[in-house]
Image (tube, rainbow, N blue to C red; front, side):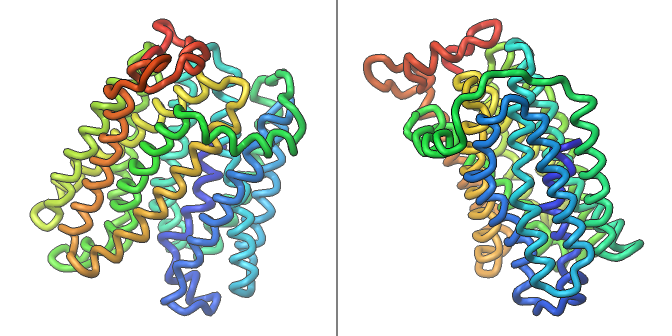
Length: 401
């Protein structure tokens, strides 16, 4: 619930861009800044706020503070009388939405090693519900009570969750890894590790492919021959939600030591999904099937990546998740920016080729890391000896995962 509400605050603007921009006096050509502002805030939060999770002894308090402050920012957006006030509220909302990464790190920390993947899978499913569900729910709320009601409801939910996490979630009770300055200074050092770079590159191309679909899908659906309205287009989010939740067992597969083969298979399915998605002009059922397959693949890979990283670096779960999500954020932005430009020149066929190309790049990174020898002291899975020694959380030790 924490993850779903937090991430919805960033993506809720997508289905209400037109009425929101019109009421705030923002020209249609610049309406994209409403969404972009939240994404920029989120990117800053990954660098500045996520490392705090490795400083505090009990991350529940950090979750509560971020949720309460996020409720204030959402309330400012809901009550904004000018575009600059709304953008300021959205920027802070995005900044504090990194509570998602703190929640993932917390779940990984309090879970027994053999159940870590399952816990990450459950929590991460909340992110998917927030991203895809926000499109459907925000559209319905805006139609009934206006776009401001979307942010008012999210503010109330955030405030309620801030109180709930302190009373419902178990205390963490762990040792601090150092002060904020020290943890922040060492954040950059995480990127020198092969493990984070490899999984980060897979995530970069994975979410570039994801962004290509969801940021460009409304363009061909609103055009001939389908000419669907906004609410009808939003229903395809339900198909994506079904596919993503279908990958809920990805965490259990990771716990069983099968993260590597599952990741490879999921990336193959991601490439195949674009074959169906490219047939959008032929039949909508083919598009729906492709969306289910794509979101299943994305969720399976995403959960496996986070499981491997938190198992390898249990003392820096917040930092390593924050570093990984930087790749996610940049990949999503690339896919969103590229798909509209490609669609304008080459139509949906060009966008589909772009999405499939990103998927093939992710598959290539995974294959190179898994099968190409890396010299003395390197395992076939691309992890060094030190990584493997850290990564013995599952029943089979996760070697080569």
